[in-house]
Image 1 (tube, helix red, strand yellow):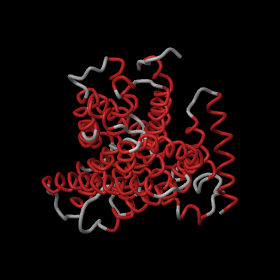
Image 2 (cartoon, rainbow, N blue to C red):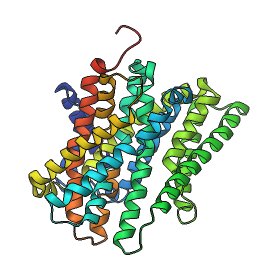
Image 3 (cartoon, helix red, strand yellow):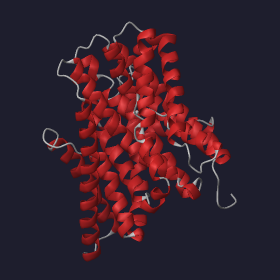
Length: 396
């Protein structure tokens, strides 16, 4: 396993550097590393490492979402409150609806199987979006209208909404019925309980850190452990009470910002260093899940469906931003930033196939292709356009 980790790290650094020299996002190199070294490539990643791949990806996601919370100022979010709420579900709803309508025209699948495919495709990737938005916040781009904060907050809750729908559609396929009232209640409860748990734990930690003298490194470890506990709590309560662990993690960080901005800034610096290594593992292991044989089988039909669904998703983003002070350029940037898909698709794309759904292979194929297309497209789009589309308060 150690050899595999070393190989992944070194190849990620090399390919990431090559991509950056070619004016492409470094994460493209990281994804390629996973594809090349993974079980569907050279098969150089140890089976033991692949067996805990999902847990390692989750750890990396927790790190970046905690860091996002530590950079999220509630006062900034108040400026764009309505838009942030709409971005949590409207773009995903547009994309899921588009896939449900058009997928049966491209593939021999039922309408319900198309809805399951739409739920797999509908989530934006916080692992791609959040680091990009944090960099923009550090450089001051879009700060006057809180655009990075708007996108980060929407992306965090978007995943919860999509996963609730995905689970509901699977239940419907299994003959267990579907109650839209239950979906609304579960989603709302997951958000409320997640926010409550994160805020409560955040208040406790601020008190502890203010009462006990600890090194910043120790505080970082305590905060990381608290974030792990919140995500574990989601699994422990799953059968009894919906709770979004990832949203709780962001709320935890945001509460620390609210109570002690100085402490949050110091901890954020530590998390920036943790993310350097976590990012390599996250995207390499996502790449390792990609089966290129599925991509070859996908053909033009899958490409056409993905781009059609993305186009309708963009329309959903524009709907969310109606009657806001954002200019057309800034709205275009928000649409671009809401394109990337990676972590959720890698996590749930294979579930329909594993559960014996006839269209499972097709769903996985489209999910894999969506990762390969949209993760680089969205990341490259953000990097290439933010200077032209977003305002900057100071000359650079």
